Length: 381
Ligand SMILES: [Fe+2]
Image (cartoon, rainbow, N blue to C red):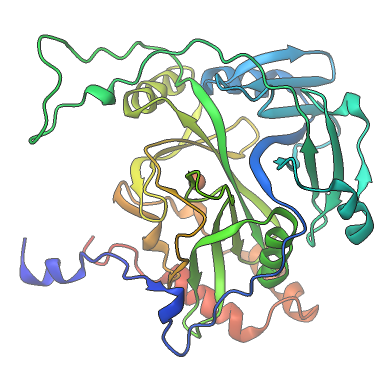
């Protein structure tokens, strides 16, 4: 490796929130109304349920029930449901549902945000819940009192016995991962793009009591991407459960599902390939969150992520800030596909002109977003 190549192989150098350099603006932290303790499930509308059912099975979910108009899936963990697809006129992501702490008062959402109470039969696993609407118009459910399900049997992790140079516990035993879909243990996170980053980041923090773990900012120092974790106090929480990405669309980006270990991720990729599904990106390791990842498209083009070995943090861990760069998405692995960026075509141009005309975005912000996304991710490649 030459000296010039070494010079560009760099890690992002984050700033702690207490030591931000002058141009970087801290992300405002509103007073929370309540506290989410789990991303319970995601709700979908699909014109045809069969292709989604086939993808969910091959992706490693367990189908709980299937009627003519509703499909419910779970993982092997105690959540009774991690995904619902309702038969409808569109293929679309409807919204996320969160399990709220026992000391959260759902009635406050009715009073402060005009939340509507859900009918109990709408909620898989029972309990009570309210529906609120986020600033982009998306439906969000806040739930309490769902009955946990008995966990499903799942193989032991193979990486627990990984031999490393310093520690080799596996002797007289082989690594033989079964050829099967990567069993989903649980739903981990959801990522949503928005034009109005400030309002969405404010709303989700206020409604869910989530904590920004990593914030990324544009060249003018304005926060524009927030990886937020649940506030579980001293109990470790995933690096991110909700991610809000500032961009040029109101859009579901992807959702991510924890699998048993790296061998499940790898064998799961083979199974999905063998079943003819469309691969998107991976295997690689993320920078922010550190997960080993593998991304797939469902039959309608929605992005799903398998992951394992993510970072965990307690509530007191300080928020970090780093510049938004496309290359900061992954530490190693194949380059992120160009499909993760807005297409440079007439449709995008007309859409952006519409945003400018409605003053939904300023020309300055648009330019900074373009700079962040267009900077070469791997300058040596
Ligand atoms: Fe992800």
